[in-house]
Image 1 (cartoon, rainbow, N blue to C red):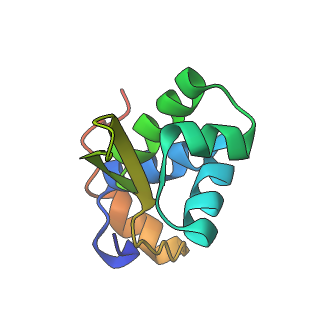
Image 2 (spheres, one colour):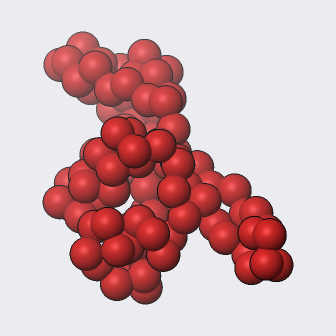
Length: 108
């Protein structure tokens, strides 16, 4: 995801996803530690798996992380997540361009 090509809706989703300290920690952990599966990531971040799933879903919906389901050697399904490449160069001009594409317009 490159900021030059973000629509208003994509910008809102990305900013909303990054507005939570847990989600910032998830992106940081995946960025520095590489791809990881949910149970291990939950242990590293010291949060419950259900809570982590909620945060990962929000980040994935915004295009900030990706996931891939894989089978381990013992047949367990492991959902691996990794940080997606993205850059958001937040400038007034970029915001003005993104606002022009918003699908949810305020009521007048």
